[in-house]
Image 1 (cartoon, protein in one colour):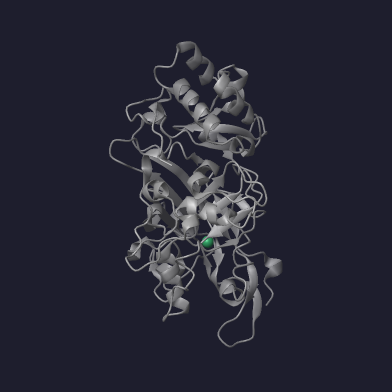
Image 2 (spheres, helix red, strand yellow; image 1 turned 30 degrees about the vertical axis):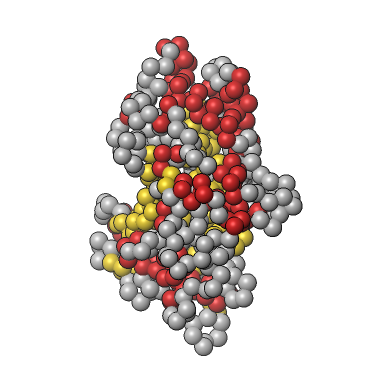
Length: 446
Ligand code: CA
């Protein structure tokens, strides 16, 4: 589907919320991502829209009569909620109408009365706690970076790193929705079963805790059980994206993954960034699908669509930062571990979504489809420590002189993402962070 550009993408547009006009903000008026927040005072979870350093309280804006137009009312009412699920269930047209209305309301040249009314319902992000944006019924994790799949495959199967199905099937597995956590939630080091070489298996805290830099796609309108989704219509089922850290215990993973894939090595926690950047906001940053090598097979017909090949890619720059407890105590800036780009994925979001539903599996509003670790061709574009350190063989050095094969207790991992393109305003995905806390003492038995 050709991305639709309208006045909400005008790079010259500015907001009366001055912090939205600052060059490096992730949330200029061209972005307008949705999230769920609460403030210390009220305690209740509410739907908001990010603008600069603030949040517009959508329920309160509706109560002011600021979202009352016929085409906006439907989406506005869906925001009287403690999650984005109802808004997600509506699909692209009402969402676009709401975005256009919010853009008009927050523009510098908005009518004075609207502006005064809206300004009473802005909350500073610094004073809000961000929650999970949706109630996620099902979470699926793909494996869509051929660079990641090849690098990881080489560690385990040097002679044939990519399995024969990789270029035909968007590989994925069913993740665990109950342990999805909001950014800034501490992540406890898991305990589990591991095996060192030929030694007896043991149970205890993981010694090879890792992060995975991923992007998650939230499902908008679902599909009925038994009905597939045509690839040409797949993006009508997409709501928007966030950052995902798929924390992974590599030692547990190596011992448990055959023959049915990851299980407890992944299900102890997965962190999400709180702001969901809509497909509409991403429109200027759509790009061609990944250029397959000449000898690669073409996608099977159900995964091949000319429009998806032309616009199915998404140019999002992604970064991983690490700061150890010592670095933070010394006031040092976090160290950048890698930079990669979402456009380098072998499969598009539409292909992953279409494949997921191709057997008649019903997707539902608020389901989360994560991309898998986003790695690029370059060594400094590897999106997890397993790849960066070659499974601990080549530790990385931090500015304190500390070395890391895998994560230590107290380490903070921060993922960031942003879109930049000539002729458009830069927008960001915000950040997804988490600090590793020690394994629970009661479980430290071997
Ligand atoms: Ca993953």
